[in-house]
Image (cartoon, rainbow, N blue to C red; front, top):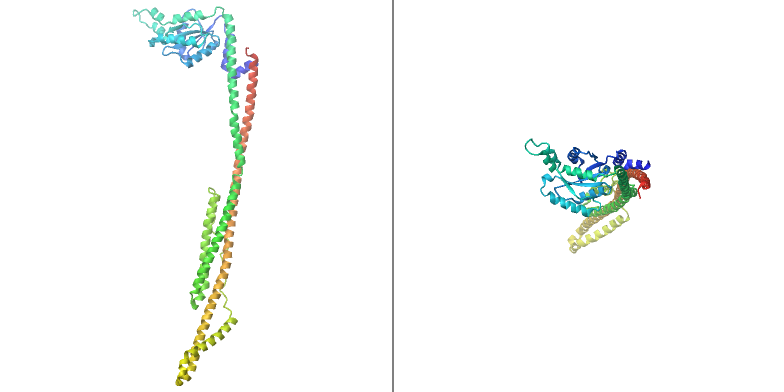
Length: 486
């Protein structure tokens, strides 16, 4: 009963055939027509013609059910490897073969094909049976009933079809003791069905074992996803920090270069300024600092965009192009220069030098007695003029120096403010990009976790199903092994 259940699950057609064999009348042996590589419907016309003859022969559709199998060969060409293999498989069931050559009415060289087939069969199988191949034409047999009266002898046409000779060959192949032959045939058919079932179970077990490669691929995919579960967040964070630090170094260096260049430029302009133009220097400095701030901001945001694109090429958020830190302030104008001891000394030295220069200039006049009196006021006038010029020049040079020092001190403060502005912008940028990377990494981690869960479920389901199916295959093979003939 257990073996029948296994056969019913794996080979229902074979089990149905065995049931028909068991309930078949043992005194009426069955015959089947088998055309290698063709549909069973192609044999219907020949079966119809054979059934018209007496004694009646019981035909079945399955060659495994038949005691006698009529091998229908095609007169168009000799047997090929596929046809010979099919015939060989049927011969292993123990059925008695009868060979017939069909389509002889359409092929003049059918005798050559028949002889060649006989040679192939004799060399292919030792138990090929009677190798006589009977030419037959179901079409001629059907046409014999359509011959008009007086147009010929229908009996001769029917005799030429070969159906009668094939019928006689089938009767000769039938066993003398049908009951005994039926028992042996049932045993052989059962063994054949069991063998086919074992082959099917073995093929299914091999297919299940071959799924190990698919399971290994799923496990490899799960390992790969687990390894990059963070979505590359760690690598992206490290890359972001590296780019931000590099941008910080470059931008701070650029700020220093720009401030030093502005300081040198302003020093040159101050050195060329007249005393009246010195008062405009603070406003010029404010304008230059404002322009410098704009240039630095533009450079900073260009670099921020580069950092953003390098750190997040596909998901970079758009950062606002404004800086929250205030712009650098120049501060109040420079205080008036304090006149110290050096100014007083310059007055004394200037007056003395001026008097000396005045006397030196009017010395030629003292040689003329009439002009000696006039030399004194002229000397005083020239000395006073020289003293004023020396004092004015000294004051102008001192004011320039004072203004240059104020510019230098102011630019130091501006440089510090610009550096603070750059650092604040980079810190804000790093914070925004880090937040975006964390959010993106979390989303990717959730998606990867979902994929890992799906793959794990597939592995678990496939493993459980595979294990259960393999166990079922092994149990069924064990059951069939107990009933397999030795």
